[in-house]
Amino acid sequence: MGAGVVGAAVARELSRFDLSCTLLDAGPDIGAGTSKANTALLHTGFDATPGTLEARLVRRGHELLSAYAAQVGIPLARIGALLVAWTPEQRAAFPGIVERAHANGDAATREVGVEELYRREPHLGPGAHGALDIPDEGIVCPFTTPLAYATEAVLNGCELRRGVRVTGVERRSDGGFELQTTRGSIGTRFFVNAAGLYSDELDRLAGHDGFTITPRRGELIVYDKLARPLLNHIVLAVPTGTTKGVLVAPTVFGNLLVGPTAQDIQRKDDTSSTAEGLAYLRAEGKRILPQLGQHEVTAVYVGLRAATEHTDYQLTIHAAEGYACIGGIRSTGLSASLAIAEHVRTELGAAGLELHPKERTATVRMPNIGELSRRPYEQTGRIVCFCERVTLGEIEAALSSTIPPVDLDGLRRRTRVLMGRCQGFYCGARVAALLREGTA
Image (cartoon, rainbow, N blue to C red; front, top):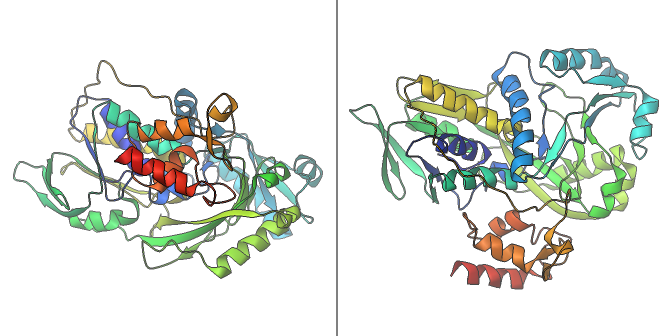
């Protein structure tokens, strides 16, 4: 249950075996919740707490996703990160961060002086006291990644049901589960809870009470593509006990983003931005990159992270029940997704799930929607969205794909249409008509 980046990764992993597998999501599309609204970083796990499940799985996930992205065409670039100290106190934290990074297997993290920092980032604001260089950190497409996982799962025989919410979980006498859903009941021997923000509620329906999700609102600002030359690396903040701070980073789409904020809220569907949050981000962005203030904002978006009262992932396999709960994944889920799936598959196998690899499995090659390699408009095709240079052929291909979009938001994540400067003012009507024709 849950077709975000983690749930889709688990479905992909299990679909490679002779199993009857169904992927459910309450939303209208793959990756339409938390997975679509994050900083889209490929984390190394350098700053994770050593010995935790998160530290291990993020490190392994970085390795797996790097290889998988190259194989299936997910936009990804290891541009490296610089963790900048702006005060003597932040600079004094460097030895501990380096020690932690090395304990997590990231031996490449090293300290660089002020002169080298400004040589590598000449547009950085004044007053920095030095930085840590984390060369293996990168940027990745947050939209193509879960869609690639789910596409591969469906092609391998996994059934996908969108718009289905689980309302009840009953244990059967034979040891399996009967899931009550908004579209009827589903019987299953093994049940994986990857419901993200709602994983705690589903966990309680399954008879457990190990954690509580408190939505953590993260507001982000996307700047115009003309701002992209201002930055060469991801610029990170020195983390505190409660937040990793505000970062400035390039995107695979050719923009710069600033964020996120970190505010615990009550509602799990409240993705509204705040005047205070956006003002804070604009001020921080201008402090870190002064020239950023001269550039236009293209978009604002808000993501809700699945924070819990615990500091580590809440990933528990109840072997006797055949139930796996994946909760509290927070912001590193994109990077760790394939490793989480690998871990769940291994643990379910130990719990009695018979895993016989299929003789042949499907492979996918995803359409390129990033700026890291040639786009279709550079070769041929009629352009529909001029801001993002999206062609009619790309839209038609998305509408006829293995997992077609059902709304404009889904079409946006597959093609970048409506994501540009005008936010659909020019092409919105045409794109909406194409969607209606393609889904009729």
